[in-house]
Image: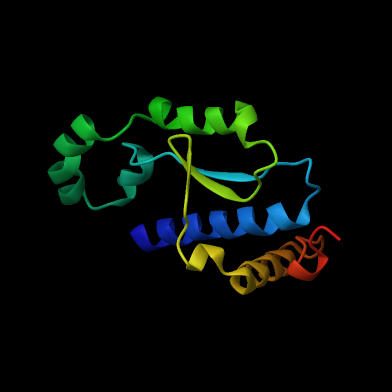
Length: 130
C-alpha cells in the first residue's frame, strides 16, 4: 500500500508542476502536504501492523482536522497568489524531490492521463504560458 501512496503523491506534485506552467498566471496552483496523519490509510495495512503502530499514531500523528488546516491555509493565503507550482508544508514552501521536478515525467503523466480520459489536454511544456 505504501508504494501506491508514494506514487500518488508524486503524481500530485507532477500535476501541480504541469498545471502551474499551463494555466493562466491568474490561477495559483499549489500542492500541500498535510504531514503525517492518523487517517483511514492505515486500514489497508495488516492488522498486526495497525495494532503495533496504534499508540504512536494516536499520540503523535495529526488528526484529519489538523491536517486539513494546511489545505485551508493554501486556499485562503493571499501571500502565495502568483507563486504557482510550489509545494507547501505547514505554510512554508519546501523543495520537492528531484522526481517531482521532472518536466518530462510530468508531461508523460499528463499524456497518459489524457489518453485514459480519451480527450482533453493537460498542456505541455511547449505550450506553457505562451
